[in-house]
Image (cartoon, rainbow, N blue to C red; front, side, top):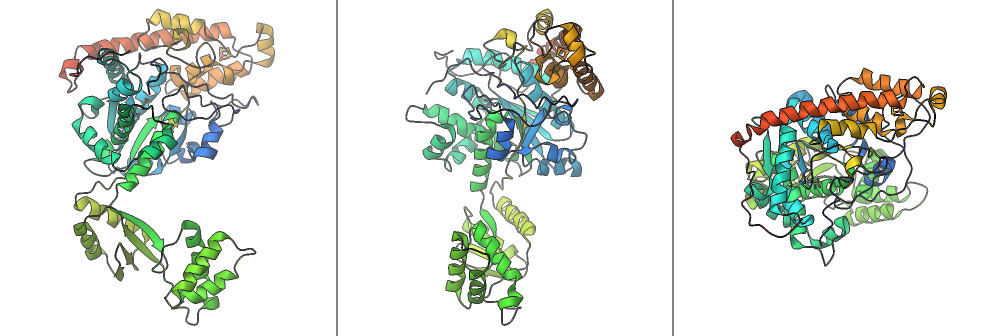
Length: 535
Ligand code: TRP
Ligand code: SF4
């Protein structure tokens, strides 16, 4: 399946935050519904951020903010609004344990101010002490977007230059392109064994017309995401837009499927579903009520007790009771269970050997009676790694809001006036800001009376996302003055336009400095691949 090549940088429109006039930074949830399809290759429009939390299980970033040492301004201002499992990364950051950050860029056009957010996120994580990775998704651009290698090479250079100009340290971090990274390709192949076409259909809507190489580019991205863990397992954060969330969920799944062992909790020899386990746990806690000897409660007696538990029968209760009944006199006893998923025989034996305290070995699992769950997880990973496995930690992600286009609506690379490219002439950047849509009122008089609508203003977004840099005071001042009616759009845009011009000048000067040093980088800027039609 070939998709139109011009939709890459389509930046979905953020929702309209509640217009209650509260003078705050951009809000991190709220909004009206129209479309929450998360499609990595469509021009996805994520207009309801709240739904992402409810339907897709993304968590509010606010909830982890306190755990992050010296959070980035995009985090403080709610531009980074959501995350999956960021806590292990924050913990490693605080405790100085190994961790990594990685993101990837499809080189389909010029890098613009939307990409700058992600560049900044990678650079910030690098400065916080993480192993930082940035990759150019050239295989994806070639297969999913049909771009020629010549075009890809040109854009690749530009992405790398901007990333460097924004502070990425190539000595201390890794830059690569998918097409020349053999380790990534090998890992992609292995991960592909755990993925099948039905999943591609379900997750990405692929069908009989989808190009095989497009599917390959998906497993390549899965390999990108896990690449920082090839040396050793470590928490890894992937900063992306929410359109990439399907990839994150899939990567987390695959990471788990590659593991040697799965650690679960059990109460007897048989397996339980999560809900059944909860119910059996409740029965166990009430063992005094049914066991002849509470030190040795029996499954059968627990089953009888559970049959009367709660006001109405549920499917899970019925099935739990049945399992307990069938086990009869078997003792009911909490334990952690190591299920053999992909372990080699040697690893399985080594695990059994390494378990302290009482243990019981079965065909495809081992039960340990004196280990807690966390210790068991740690042991499982250690044994896996010692025996040549990957031991992947499920990758984490953080999600940023998309910027509104300067002309209102979407920021789109196919509408030059809607976005500012990092390669735009500074004067052009100035002009684009000057002619941007605002959240201002019809007349100056009305603006003074009612205040502007900063929450709906693309110019305010420029201040909050970029122009204020680390200066929260300044961003807040602009906001407060705007909504308080003390700021009029003409002057506000003039100030923003000047700041933008300055930013582009500085950025491009730094790009030029790097341009002279590009040859020193260990990076293949010219693709060795044969030219093909495309673009
Ligand atoms: N699919 C991403 C995009 O469309 C690019 C990408 C490839 C990526 N590999 C990645 C992003 C790994 C994050 C992590 O922009
Ligand atoms: Fe936007 Fe500035 Fe006008 Fe407020 S004053 S609406 S922030 S342009």
